Image (spheres, rainbow, N blue to C red):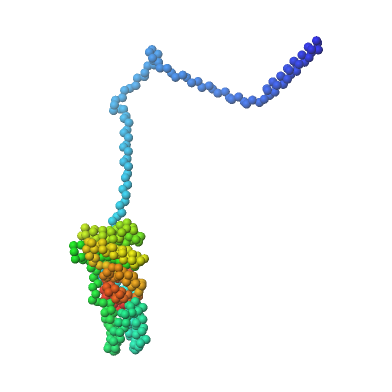
Length: 404
C-alpha cells in the first residue's frame, strides 16, 4: 500500500516537472516588440440640428445691394472652328508666242551650224581648178551622205556639170550663186507650203497630226498650236493619242500655255471618239482650228490603217479634214522614208513636219521626203524651245546650207 502511494507521488512530481519545462520554453520565445502607443482619435458624432429653445441664434450679417453683389462672368463664346480652304492652283500665265513671220531666218544660225558641212563641202569641191571624174564622184558622194537621195543627186550633178562647162572661169561668188540656184530648184520654190487652217464650211479647220512615237509628234502638235495662236487663230486640241502614257497631260500642258483647251478621254480610250468630241467642241466654241494628236504605233500596218482610217472617217462626219501632217525625225535620214511610206498608204498626207533638223547634217532629207511622198515640207523643228518650230522657207534653208 505504501509503495503504491509512493509511486503515485513520484508520477505527479514528474508531470509537474515536465509542465514547468514546457512553460519555461514558451516564455523564452522572442515575441515581436509591441507597437508604440498612439493617441486615440475620437470622432465626434455628427451634431444633431438644434431646434426650439436649444437652437443657436443666427449671426446677423450686413445686407448687400444688387450692385454690390458680383455676378459670375459670362463664359467667352467658343471660337468658331477655322476652316482651311484648299489652295486652288493658280491658272497658268498665258504666253504670247513670238510671230512666225521670218522665224526661220531668226533660227538660221542653228540650221547653219549643222548644215554647213554640206554647203562648204560642195563649194570646196566645185572650186577646184580641174573638175575631173573623181571630183564629180566626191560631189555626188557628199550629196548622198546628206540624204538628198539617189535620183535627186544624179539630177543635180548633171545640171552642175553642164552649167560649169558653160560658165568657164569660176569665181567663188559665181559658184555660190550657181549652187544656190540649183539647190533651190531641187528643194522647190513653187510648192504650196501654207498650213491650211480654214474650212470651206462653217466649221473650224481640222488638222490631224500623225507620225511614229518618238519623233516628237505630241510636242510638235503643242508647238504648232503656238504657231497658230501667234498668227491670231484660236485653237482646240484633241488628245487622241490614248495609248502612250501621259501623252494627254503633255498636250494639255502645251495648250494651257497659250490658252488652248484640250479635249481628252480615259487612257486607252477610243481615239476616234475623242477626235469627234474635239471637233464638236471646236464648233461649239467657234474656234478657228482643231488640232488632233493621234497615236503613232507601228506594231502592224493593218492595225495602224484601221485606227487612223477610223479617226479620219469619224472626224469627216463634221466636215472635211483640211490637213494631215506627217511628223518625221530628220536625224533618222533614209529610215524616216520607210515610216513615211507606211503612213502615206494609210492616210492622204498633205504636208510634212521635219523635227530635229538642227541636230543633223543630213538636210538633204527635205528633198528626199518631198520626192518620195510628192508633198511639201511645211514646218521644220530647229531646237527644243517652245518657239523653235518654224514655217519652212526654201530660200532661208538653202542660205543656211551654203553658209556665208
